[in-house]
Image 1 (cartoon, rainbow, N blue to C red):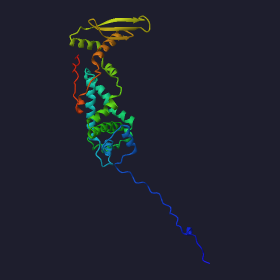
Image 2 (image 1 turned 120 degrees about the horizontal axis):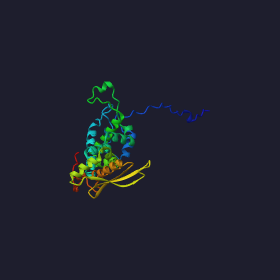
Image 3 (image 1 turned 120 degrees about the vertical axis):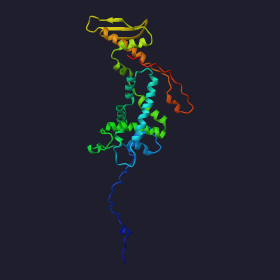
Image 4 (image 1 turned 180 degrees about the horizontal axis):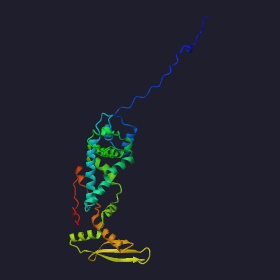
Length: 296
């Protein structure tokens, strides 16, 4: 009787497959973190490599892409243009030293670096620390650090927007991400005022107005440990400033400083920016050009 053998006896079992290592990432691949950064900042470039280039520092060698230097220069100039026009139109009487400090507060190196850390640019930028030997071959002998690299990358992102999407996209990004931030203009102004009564005298003389006169308006606790004096500063019959303090001198100082702030920090509420002409069918309506600060 022939032996019956089940077919299952001869079924070959699959051989054990040794797991292989995944393919190494390409030199210039977009990481998940970069995708997330682009989505977080609502960046919509026409080519994925544009963001990658904007995040590639000049110290990074393992790439076939150009560095972000070109974008950075363009972005820094866009920052200068759009922040300057905004401040100049909104605060037309700002003295230059105060103007420059406020400009730096909005788009200086420290601000760009801080913004980059907040949104994660510092985690995605591609860079390498430069050795002392390599530093000798660079045009700039200043060593690179993550703060500088991050600030440059933020500027490069704005430059990439300007180049790929046009000036309006770069301007909107600057307004949304930077000019929307709160900068205490009054505190910066006060820091620059050393002798407000003298400065106020020169200012009133320039406009052919009567010199400032301080008048005590109210006081309490003159002979106590916590006196309070309220002083008004007048030009003729018009009160132009008011201040308080624990001494007459302090109250007079603050009153004169307040008068200067009222003049120099004049704020235009409803205005158009010169760059509005970048849009089609828009006619720019210039604001009134104010006088320059009084020279002491």
